[in-house]
Picture 1 (tube, rainbow, N blue to C red):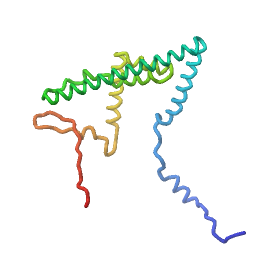
Picture 2 (cartoon, rainbow, N blue to C red; picture 1 turned 90 degrees about the horizontal axis):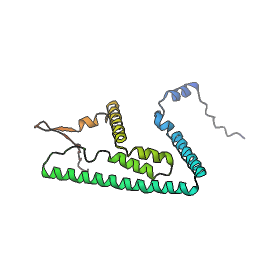
Picture 3 (cartoon, rainbow, N blue to C red; picture 1 turned 90 degrees about the vertical axis):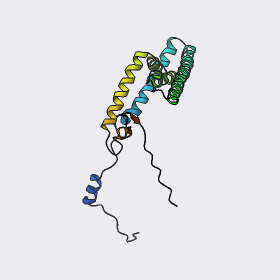
Picture 4 (cartoon, one colour; picture 1 turned 30 degrees about the vertical axis):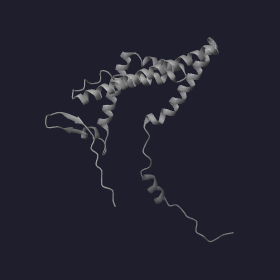
Amino acid sequence: MTTGAPIPSFSSTSASASSSAPGRPRRSRLLRFLPLGVAAWLVLEVWLLTVVAGAASGFAVLLLLVAGFVLGSVVIKRAGRRAFRALSETLQRQQDGASPQGRKNSEGNGLMMLGGLLLMLPGLVSDVVGLLLLVPPVQKAVGRYAERTFERKVREATGPFGDAFQQARIHRPDGKVVQGEVVREDPAPH
């Protein structure tokens, strides 16, 4: 049974036009391999837990996991208190008109919290990495590396937001540079 409707045909010109049109942007290597890395990490964690359970006992593995969770929560609580104390001191100094002393009090709190979080995750590899992040020389090395990487990525950024960090500086007449953000509030149309 034919209805008489023409069957659409695709010519070679329409196929070549669609293939040359830009598609989705390519995913970065990190995003491409992240699921595989997470899966490998989970398999390694489960395998290590079974090896330890076979060598010692299931109860020993349970004690290790509970101890890691408790230690991680203590570390996160301590780092949070340090960060809050440093914030309070900085705000107090700013209210008093004194110049801030820098990052001495708050240095390493983010990495300490990350270490505590890794300790709280069930698994032995995450516990080892979390414990390493609690060691001050490792914290400083990882912090410097992360800061250099972040600064390099900001410099490499292109587009309208590429120079956002440089544009957000306000130069005062006395020579001080104040970090800030310009917010324009357009009046609402009536």
